Image 1 (cartoon, rainbow, N blue to C red):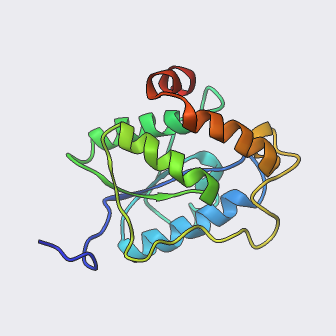
Image 2 (tube, rainbow, N blue to C red):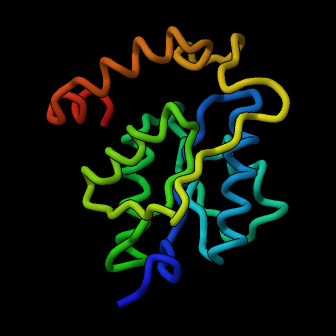
Length: 167
Protein backbone atom coordinates (compact mmCIF):
# COMPACT_ATOMS: atom_id res chain seq x y z
CA UNK A 1 0.00 0.00 0.00
CA UNK A 2 1.33 3.43 -0.94
CA UNK A 3 1.84 6.06 1.70
CA UNK A 4 0.12 9.42 1.30
CA UNK A 5 3.51 10.97 0.37
CA UNK A 6 4.14 8.56 -2.54
CA UNK A 7 0.63 8.63 -4.01
CA UNK A 8 0.11 10.74 -7.05
CA UNK A 9 -2.79 11.62 -9.32
CA UNK A 10 -3.20 10.21 -12.82
CA UNK A 11 -4.11 13.51 -14.43
CA UNK A 12 -4.67 17.18 -13.63
CA UNK A 13 -7.97 18.77 -14.60
CA UNK A 14 -7.62 22.56 -14.65
CA UNK A 15 -10.86 24.54 -14.84
CA UNK A 16 -10.90 28.04 -16.32
CA UNK A 17 -12.66 30.81 -14.44
CA UNK A 18 -13.25 33.47 -17.07
CA UNK A 19 -12.88 34.27 -20.72
CA UNK A 20 -10.35 37.04 -20.08
CA UNK A 21 -8.31 38.40 -17.25
CA UNK A 22 -5.80 37.24 -14.70
CA UNK A 23 -7.69 34.25 -13.27
CA UNK A 24 -6.77 31.80 -16.02
CA UNK A 25 -3.10 32.85 -15.90
CA UNK A 26 -3.04 31.97 -12.18
CA UNK A 27 -4.75 28.62 -12.88
CA UNK A 28 -2.29 27.88 -15.72
CA UNK A 29 0.67 28.68 -13.43
CA UNK A 30 -0.65 26.27 -10.78
CA UNK A 31 -1.22 23.56 -13.42
CA UNK A 32 2.31 24.02 -14.78
CA UNK A 33 3.78 23.61 -11.29
CA UNK A 34 1.65 20.51 -10.60
CA UNK A 35 2.41 18.82 -13.90
CA UNK A 36 6.13 19.45 -13.41
CA UNK A 37 5.95 18.02 -9.88
CA UNK A 38 3.89 14.91 -10.71
CA UNK A 39 4.92 14.39 -14.36
CA UNK A 40 1.34 13.85 -15.51
CA UNK A 41 -0.85 15.29 -18.28
CA UNK A 42 -3.31 18.17 -17.99
CA UNK A 43 -6.87 18.33 -19.29
CA UNK A 44 -8.18 21.87 -19.47
CA UNK A 45 -10.02 24.51 -21.48
CA UNK A 46 -8.59 26.64 -24.29
CA UNK A 47 -8.71 29.72 -22.05
CA UNK A 48 -6.16 28.03 -19.77
CA UNK A 49 -4.25 25.79 -22.19
CA UNK A 50 -3.03 28.55 -24.52
CA UNK A 51 -1.24 30.02 -21.49
CA UNK A 52 0.41 26.63 -20.81
CA UNK A 53 1.37 25.13 -24.18
CA UNK A 54 4.84 26.69 -24.49
CA UNK A 55 5.75 25.14 -21.11
CA UNK A 56 3.73 21.91 -20.82
CA UNK A 57 3.81 19.35 -23.61
CA UNK A 58 0.96 17.11 -22.41
CA UNK A 59 -2.13 19.30 -22.61
CA UNK A 60 -5.48 17.97 -23.79
CA UNK A 61 -8.07 20.69 -24.36
CA UNK A 62 -11.81 20.39 -24.01
CA UNK A 63 -13.76 20.88 -27.24
CA UNK A 64 -15.43 24.28 -26.97
CA UNK A 65 -16.36 24.64 -30.65
CA UNK A 66 -20.01 25.29 -29.85
CA UNK A 67 -19.24 28.09 -27.41
CA UNK A 68 -19.61 28.07 -23.63
CA UNK A 69 -19.07 24.81 -21.77
CA UNK A 70 -20.42 24.50 -18.22
CA UNK A 71 -18.37 23.04 -15.39
CA UNK A 72 -20.33 19.81 -15.78
CA UNK A 73 -19.78 19.96 -19.56
CA UNK A 74 -16.00 20.10 -19.03
CA UNK A 75 -16.27 17.15 -16.62
CA UNK A 76 -18.26 15.13 -19.16
CA UNK A 77 -15.71 15.82 -21.88
CA UNK A 78 -12.94 14.81 -19.50
CA UNK A 79 -14.81 11.54 -18.76
CA UNK A 80 -14.95 10.83 -22.50
CA UNK A 81 -11.19 11.45 -22.70
CA UNK A 82 -10.38 9.51 -19.51
CA UNK A 83 -12.45 6.47 -20.49
CA UNK A 84 -10.13 6.00 -23.47
CA UNK A 85 -6.88 6.50 -21.53
CA UNK A 86 -7.29 5.03 -18.02
CA UNK A 87 -9.36 2.35 -16.33
CA UNK A 88 -9.58 4.56 -13.29
CA UNK A 89 -8.43 8.13 -12.95
CA UNK A 90 -7.43 9.86 -9.75
CA UNK A 91 -7.80 13.58 -10.42
CA UNK A 92 -5.87 16.59 -9.14
CA UNK A 93 -8.32 19.47 -9.57
CA UNK A 94 -6.97 22.96 -10.14
CA UNK A 95 -9.55 25.73 -10.08
CA UNK A 96 -10.25 29.16 -8.67
CA UNK A 97 -10.87 28.67 -4.92
CA UNK A 98 -14.54 29.64 -5.14
CA UNK A 99 -15.05 27.19 -8.02
CA UNK A 100 -13.07 24.24 -6.60
CA UNK A 101 -15.91 22.63 -4.62
CA UNK A 102 -18.28 22.39 -7.59
CA UNK A 103 -15.53 21.15 -9.92
CA UNK A 104 -14.73 18.34 -7.49
CA UNK A 105 -18.40 17.52 -6.89
CA UNK A 106 -19.13 17.30 -10.63
CA UNK A 107 -16.16 14.97 -11.21
CA UNK A 108 -17.26 12.78 -8.27
CA UNK A 109 -20.79 12.61 -9.75
CA UNK A 110 -19.20 11.04 -12.83
CA UNK A 111 -17.34 8.46 -10.75
CA UNK A 112 -13.87 9.97 -10.40
CA UNK A 113 -11.73 9.94 -7.30
CA UNK A 114 -10.31 13.32 -6.26
CA UNK A 115 -6.64 13.38 -5.29
CA UNK A 116 -5.95 15.45 -2.20
CA UNK A 117 -2.33 16.59 -2.07
CA UNK A 118 -0.59 16.01 1.31
CA UNK A 119 -0.91 19.72 2.00
CA UNK A 120 -4.19 21.22 0.84
CA UNK A 121 -3.17 23.95 -1.56
CA UNK A 122 -5.23 26.49 -3.40
CA UNK A 123 -4.45 28.39 -6.55
CA UNK A 124 -2.66 31.59 -5.59
CA UNK A 125 -4.38 34.93 -6.12
CA UNK A 126 -3.53 36.34 -9.57
CA UNK A 127 -0.36 38.45 -9.50
CA UNK A 128 -1.91 41.18 -11.64
CA UNK A 129 -5.62 41.78 -11.45
CA UNK A 130 -8.11 39.78 -9.41
CA UNK A 131 -10.22 36.65 -9.72
CA UNK A 132 -13.21 38.63 -10.91
CA UNK A 133 -13.11 40.72 -14.08
CA UNK A 134 -15.75 43.48 -14.51
CA UNK A 135 -15.43 43.37 -18.31
CA UNK A 136 -15.62 39.59 -18.76
CA UNK A 137 -18.25 38.36 -21.27
CA UNK A 138 -19.36 35.74 -18.71
CA UNK A 139 -21.46 37.89 -16.37
CA UNK A 140 -21.12 35.53 -13.37
CA UNK A 141 -17.34 36.14 -13.10
CA UNK A 142 -17.60 39.93 -13.13
CA UNK A 143 -17.78 40.26 -9.35
CA UNK A 144 -18.15 38.20 -6.21
CA UNK A 145 -21.77 39.16 -5.58
CA UNK A 146 -22.89 37.85 -8.96
CA UNK A 147 -20.69 34.76 -8.65
CA UNK A 148 -21.97 33.72 -5.23
CA UNK A 149 -25.62 34.47 -6.03
CA UNK A 150 -25.41 32.03 -8.97
CA UNK A 151 -23.06 29.56 -7.28
CA UNK A 152 -25.19 29.05 -4.17
CA UNK A 153 -28.21 28.26 -6.33
CA UNK A 154 -26.22 25.77 -8.42
CA UNK A 155 -24.88 24.09 -5.28
CA UNK A 156 -28.34 23.84 -3.72
CA UNK A 157 -30.04 22.26 -6.73
CA UNK A 158 -30.76 18.52 -6.53
CA UNK A 159 -28.35 16.64 -8.80
CA UNK A 160 -31.00 15.52 -11.29
CA UNK A 161 -32.07 19.16 -11.88
CA UNK A 162 -28.47 20.44 -11.95
CA UNK A 163 -27.56 17.83 -14.58
CA UNK A 164 -30.47 18.93 -16.81
CA UNK A 165 -29.58 22.62 -16.52
CA UNK A 166 -25.79 22.40 -16.67
CA UNK A 167 -25.26 19.20 -18.59
